[in-house]
Image (cartoon, rainbow, N blue to C red; front, side, top):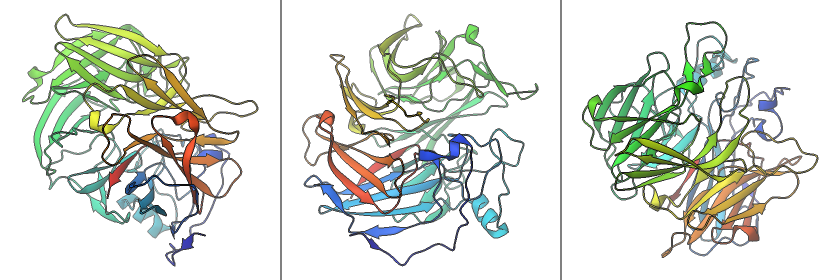
Amino acid sequence: MATQSPFQLRNMEPWTSDNPFLTRALAPVFDERDAADLAIEGRIPSGMRGIFMRNGPNPQFKPDDHYAYPFDGTGMIHAVYIEDGRARYQNRWVLTTELAEERAAGQRLYHSTLSAPPHANLANTNIIHHAGRYLALFEGGAPYELDRDLNTLGVFDYDGVLPGVMSAHPKVDPVSAELFSVQYDLETGELLYLRADKTGRIDRIVPFQSPWPAMVHDIALTQHHIVAFVCPLVFDFSRPGPPATWQPERGTMVALIPRDAQAAQDVQWINGPAFFHWHVINAHEEGDRIEVVVPWYDSFSLTGSARKLELHRMIIHADTELVEDQTIDDQACEFGRINDAYLGRKARYCYVGLRAPRSGETPQVGAFEAIARYDMDTGQKVVHQFPHGVTVGEPVFVAAPESLREDDGFIVTFIHEEGRSDGGFVILDARHIERGPMAVVRLPRRVPAGLHGSWTPM
């Protein structure tokens, strides 16, 4: 039986909406809880000890009519703490400056991304642990630092060195512990390469110009380069209507940024085929050949959906300046992860949220019906399909204690069960996900579908 702490935020007025981005698995929750000694179905693996944190949109006050996932909603962190075969749960809003203002006013003050200003730093996309700090990330603002109990400590601007915003998807090298990021400006088209050392000190800032204003939501890391894809979703705020249009005739421009770049002229630009992506699963290089694995969209629109979402391998030949586009699988997937110890190196296995619709159900963005494991050497795909009404988020890899092989470990994620008020946190054997969960930690409340998270060993 879960033990509920006496912690309780002042009452938050619940509300409902018929906006599909605020219903079912995407519907927000309206309180913050602590719960210990959670019930466990099955058994937590021996030696598993750490904290799983996941960020995602969870508006406290009812948004305007233009609210859309994944662009909007103040971030809420959901965390599961695993130690000695036991589990406890916490959730907290990231207490941004803007949310504090709205709480003081008792109403929404800031508008959704596709509405007119003012806009907020939502701190809602990712949470990482770097240089001893937990950072909630949103590419429209600076990071917010939290402690391990999810208390918001405030904006973290790298002692005033951070030039404005930071990417929601920086990459941390598993060997050097350096952090790498590329920020973008949709007005000017300027990109900014940033590097922080293992102590969290920014030691490299290199501005350079993109061929056109575009989102660079995620980047790839290799042992010698950062790879940024500038896709042909072109932003222009001077014209009426949607601020971005799909212009495939431009192709996709690939920026190869040396990790030790000093100036804009160090960046190599290569033209490749048109596509769109949100996320990068992994990349590695062998000489002048760089492979990047991405969930690949054939197009993108702010007001519609792509016709195709597939898993692709982009092969960049730096010497001949050619880009190959190879299909790995045509089944839709997103939120891919690997064993982070192999980030930027050749990894054999990756894990994704898989779109596998079931009869009688309407799929929701960000909520997947299955998890798949891909063997990138053999092409084999293994799938665990969740039961009817159950959807799952990003599958995060947790290395087993004293692991020897790349896939020695576990996949962890939250599940959402349609019609239930409680929630679940599942643990699967990364080598045999088809067998289903080894353990399900029952949570005192449902956890809405969200975005990205991380595992930090204790």
